[in-house]
Image (cartoon, rainbow, N blue to C red; front, top):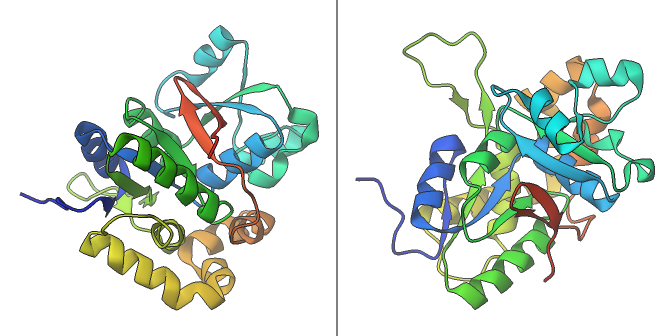
Length: 250
């Protein structure tokens, strides 16, 4: 049976990894650099209130019940000037407004793991602060920490094929956070940290040319790639409070 026990700091991929960590009762850090995590961090920095929700459920109906606005897709929202999964679309004018944010990866993993002792959102933007928040909570609770790089989804996959496509931006984001976590690290966490340390001086270039980066650029969202590739520029750390994100105190 696959296991990273007895290590205090672990790395698990995607929805299955989120479920495994949730069942263990671990502190969790969700990492979806392009773009769920970066969007949540950026939006919360401006005071917006975000409710994560899986994309295959009725998000619009859920938003209506909350008195919130359902966030549209990037292209659709850009036409009408509304905030979207693009992190640079959030500004100070969105403070104290409620939004339901869906995504195939980060929002879905958050929903799966919503019952853990603490669920933080980490990215390159807030890697150091996210690690500090998790370390403080770990010291208080003695729970283990699992960092979950969410990855992407293959399109047009066949029925017998896996949907998860591991992505370097999430692996590097996870590695940046892992490098600052306390506690003994699993081999998987050690290798993830090593990838970040090796690539640290050229993270922006690697993500810009990565498959995910090129995909966003082709759709006209190169500014998102640039924004999400910056390391430790924010101290904002979102933590899930029942059904929405608030800023963690650490």
